[in-house]
Amino acid sequence: MTITDIRIRKVAGEGKLKAYVTVTFESCFVVHNVKVIQGESGVFIAMPSRRTKNGEYKDVAHPINTEFRARLQEQILEAYDQAADAPAAEDEEE
Image 1 (cartoon, rainbow, N blue to C red):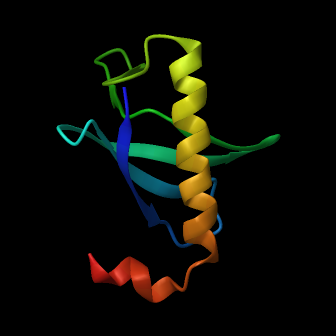
Image 2 (cartoon, rainbow, N blue to C red):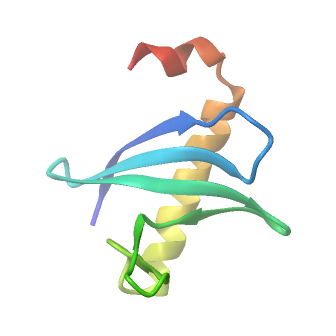
């Protein structure tokens, strides 16, 4: 499956959440609200999730295998690094 577009929306502030990401696959399927999070050992992605009635969080959409998850994370973090180097004014154009 080809990732055809990645859009980064940086989050201002000092918290662990660094950005929200929208990923488009094959120019025909989109997943919103993938998160870029700063962890103790570096940044990583978290898939969109919802809170269940018992308080747990369950992913709404997620990769089926580790190979695709690794490829998805690599491409998202590469786009995030490029966006982090870009001027903040680009964030306001959407």
